[in-house]
Image (cartoon, rainbow, N blue to C red):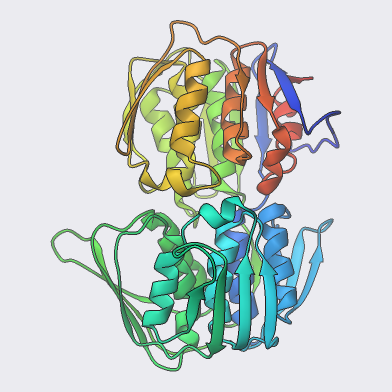
Length: 448
């Protein structure tokens, strides 16, 4: 087994691709591109550090390109080399060089939320906006949180949503309360910048936190850049209750980005779907910063052979996948991958904790229900729980992707077992994984 990269490009990529299952089991080792979540977080921390940081195996995709553009418009020196997959950023010790900027964030939630908090450290006027769908994605909880830390941030369109204006004069800091919101990115955004506030910041956490593994990722990455965060937990429930962020400075780093664990789930699931197949994902494992590596445990529960090493995950396919009941509140980006697998499992699958999926690039819950039905599944949705009754035999279908990258990648998995599955608007994978269909072809999947 060895890693390979194809320079394969599909004619008419903007319309659709049709998939044909592999003719035989596959046995491959591969690593998806670098993590979007880590790349965008690391760029923020590098900009806040005291000197030059080099980020290796960085992801170059729509979401990270808008982050790079925003940092440049804010006056940071950013050298991006796509061929070498490196980004070099000269940090300014918490200062924002520009005194004003209009920042376009596309449809990248991490970019608009992280950069809004970053701007609060500056001095001047900053406007943040995105595409039309971004104007439907909430940012109100972050605006409230920053204002409660004595920043000046306001909505200049629909209350609770972008665009927003930051009238910055440094971030005072202080005490703030944070509930269980629809996105953990609000909390991560404030964590990044709080050590550069004028006063120690204490965040009191109320209720069970959404997507907590992503917050843990943020704090572990802050530690990588020399900033230790103090976390307190309830002695009985062990739920996080308070985060203390003393004033400090980030240190520059030479940091290698892990492969994207969310994008790795498609290949792990592919191996589970095709009996006799084997996938080895190098660079991810028990030591990973990313919570989505827990998806491999779900495959084990479904009956696949799974080996999780410190820096590698290996999955081997099985003749029968068993339906399971699973909670996705901590790993929401893997829910779509699992939902497609459920169409090929024996029994009824239940997906819980899906509330955050309604405020992503599209309403992923509604989109999942629509497209799973096209494959022949019966799907019931009650609040944040989805129940999937698989068809006796999934049938080919034309799958709409709703300009959402995870819809395209997850439903392509059906094409490993069903001939003639068609994925519409496949170019939406450019958001986080531009070469996805190239890599899928390595598994022996026919693409036309």
